[in-house]
Amino acid sequence: MGTAHKAVFRSDQLRIEGASRAGDRTWFRVHPPGLAFDVGRGALELTGSDQIFLTHGHLDHALGLPFVLSNRVMQGLGATRVHCPIETRAALEAFVEAAAALERVEYDYSLQAMEPGDRVDVGRDFLVEAFAVDHGVPALGYHLVRKAKSLAFEHRGLPGVRLAELRKKGVDISTERDDYWLSYCGDTSRRVFELEPRVFESRVLLVECTFFDHSERERAPDYGHLHLEDLVSLEDRFENEAVILHHLTRRHRPDELRRAVDSRLPELAERIHLLMVSEP
Ligand SMILES: [Zn+2]
Image (cartoon, rainbow, N blue to C red; front, side, top):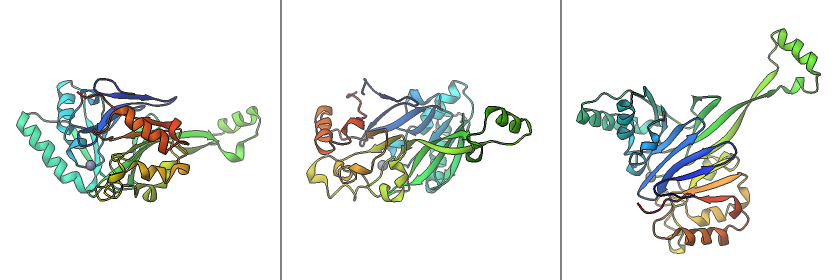
């Protein structure tokens, strides 16, 4: 799923484009609703996003924020809502304002602090919910949730005429449920699976997998990252339709990583996608 500088994943409902490599850059644009998860070192593909969700302040995820805001101003694209972990808000604001002063431009944006459990509407029946991860610096993951409407339980089985009557009387016959379309974990150690087991259930799971080598097995948690073996030990828990691994190492070729996944996760391999981009 790689092209020259970005990769694209498509499912029935979602289109995710992005680029991610360990220590280099990580950004994703997710349609619907067209929002950005992290901004890498800046990517033109994010210019159309009026909602940006940053997982943490490491520069391979957040450096590009002023670049994206600047491009949006240049193209007259209107206000941008930026969401970030509460602990990073002040530093991010100072960083963005320094860039604006440097350019002598005023960016049209708001910076909204998020904590685990916070939800924000992102339009078209979608919301984003923040969840806790473990990365050694303040960090969050984000779920993309679709608010799906269906017929309320007590009205199921009623004939159409009767339902129409109820509607006419102003009775709300529908019920709303949360459909977890995508969980994006950002950078995290394996603790994310204890902190937010819901990630096993979302339709698409976008999760990092920084370490592959056996020699790195013990180091991974200290660095706040995941090792392939962390996924192996949890293989039967993933209910997701697709698991996209990103933040992959640059030390192995794509075919080597694929072989490692196929041999270590035989049951899950069919649902695993490796998000890779070719060398620039
Ligand atoms: Zn990081």
